[in-house]
Amino acid sequence: MPSASHNWTLDSIPDQSGRLAVVTGANSGIGQVTAEALARRGAHVVLACRSPQRGQAALDRLLAQAPGAHAEARPLDLASLASIRAFADGWDHDRLDLLVNNAGVAMVPFARTADGFESQFGINHLGTFALTGLMLSHLLASPDPRVVTVSSEGQRFARYDPDNLNAERRYRAMFAYLQSKRANLYFATELQRRADAAGLKLRSVAVAPGLTRTNVLTGGANGNRGRLYGALIRLLVRAAFRPTPEGAKTSLYAATVPDLPGGAYVVPDGPLQLRGEPVLRNQERAIHDTATARRLWKLSEKLTGVPFRLSDDATYTAHPAQEA
Image (cartoon, rainbow, N blue to C red; front, side, top):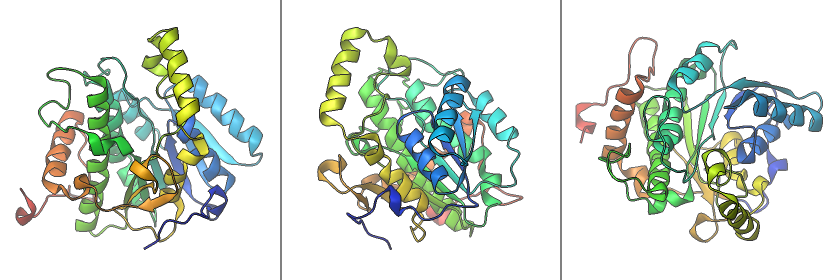
């Protein structure tokens, strides 16, 4: 099993030639760095972005910085099941080797997605869940498929309430965000358990980026919070958060280290996982809470209408002995 290395940098990424990758939210922040780094190392990268204009701008920047890179931009809005289905239905490559579930929102004012889900739960978890399920057949066509899902170091402090996942009761932005990030970790580890049970080569890995300079707290729905909010947040981010390439390290480590085990959780090795170099952490409570993960999985399939087909003719069903 690989261990953290203080010498691991983006230059440590092995050759990615011949690999086909999708990075969601690739027009800014960690997603943009992830997509660019993969493309620079030879991967064909699909930038999956909510805004076609911002996606094209990100693609133009990538190709300007890495002439000859293989990349394309495609629209994908994780707040819309119809958009997710359109993305999957429009997939015209013969396989998918790597899916990086990076896109998300953070601590936004209360809102509902196009399908009526609370936006943070709907985008961060349900959108990611549905996209992975709908792209699963393409992943399983790869000889070495991998799914990387970006959680958060903050999930450790989530007060996970299975009866209030969709803001059925009181809405608190921070609570909902941390809960959605805990759901990301439940999803990633449960996907690995189900892949293992089906005898598949699929590797599912979760990551936490640490405190990172991105526009997640100021862009999107947070852009309407006013000038004072924006100024204060930008000041905080500059003072306390680390540069975006540092935050992308865990995603890229999880996406490219050859012998990384499925089911791993990659986090910064510093205090409270806020900064540092990639390291594998297996002591998180959520990783071992299989009963909650299974309940969330069943709910997610029901809400999204997306069953995970882990073989050609059947969906995975847990052995009775595994059920809570």
